[in-house]
Image 1 (cartoon, rainbow, N blue to C red):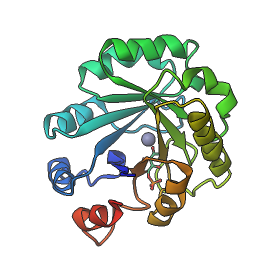
Image 2: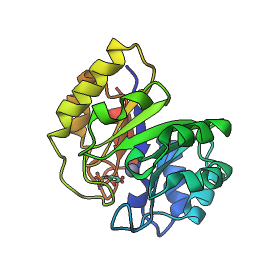
Image 3: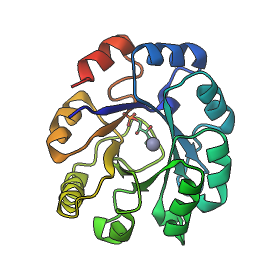
Length: 217
Ligand code: DX5
Ligand code: ZN
């Protein structure tokens, strides 16, 4: 199974975002992961619209936007117009997630739901047949450099079993404290996408190309 490698750009070296994108393009990453935060849904602020516009204009690779914000439905049009190829929103922050999924699809953008560590699969079952991606948070959202929450593994297994049982097409992606060991551990659970931050990719002595080459199973 080929896996998607998704650099979490909030962890990039902002001294030169242009060089970062050029190096990651050269390393042949799959999807740029842009974390947007509002200081309410999560107690932090991530990247901004200008960062998204810059990255969008400097690559032909896929760009995803992870909305860690309250009331995401109000901002779908904005992020679609800024060029997102995939939009992840948290159903925990949305009174009508099915309407929000429709809104994303109306822009011909792929829809994903992002699940907090405390959100059960049962809670979102009605949405799983409607989306192209499910982003399983393996840390409490909002900050890089945290510890992996091992109790989420059971949820990943439950999600994969549900997907197989119902023959659904969504891709399982994990986000948070994903190390190289974790990737090897999670591939058998049906995880096909990995958000890579400080645990694997950024702030290392090794080049992005060398790390990504090793991770391309
Ligand atoms: C978590 C963020 C990710 C990720 C960063 O809210 O969405 O950017 O955790 O990677 P790590 O956890 O490896 O620093
Ligand atoms: Zn994220």
